[in-house]
View (cartoon, rainbow, N blue to C red):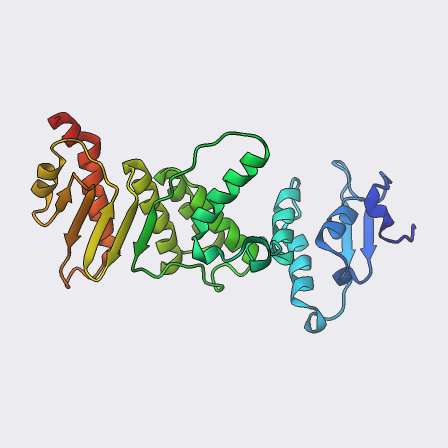
Length: 282
């Protein structure tokens, strides 16, 4: 029997050890517990780790989260998953707070990430072209409720992945991953990914912005091939496209209350014309 402090996490190697007992495991960090647990067991030797702690009623929420993580991830190669959970438990710091980045909401999360990426590359001496991030203003509720994802770090990562997506396929894969990890997506989360899809479509089209408010949808900075105005009117007589100023608009009636469906239909029609019919007509 060896009685030791947490110093053994530094790499003490006893190949024959097959049992570990940790007193007051609730006071140790997740990475500490993971390293200590790794001191026992080999590929050909079954080992057992006993983590003792006070009654769950007196444990802190973070301590419960740390201990639950070790119970959840016991298979070989769980280090990365445990590290991600550790980030969720401890938080990602104040990178998105006022002290570090100012008011992110004033410029939007996607624009903030783009500016941060450009600044990092500039400090590294790399020349980069300014990324064009379209503005999307659609009257839908889009956020990540705590009942769906509790940890702030995971929420930040979700926003980052949506902002970094460059294709609709990436966002479709993200939907599937979230559904697999957390269950059926709440409407606000699905809307958040939908807004990412709108941004991707606008970047493909080279448009500056899309706004859907008060039963009117408009796009600015939209340059379509010659003949597009007639083709768009052929798909919907209410479509109005002014090539000279690159502006598209359409009014939708009160019964068309599903603004998301309207946006999807309009973008689908424009992309269809942009990618095929208008180029053929030209």
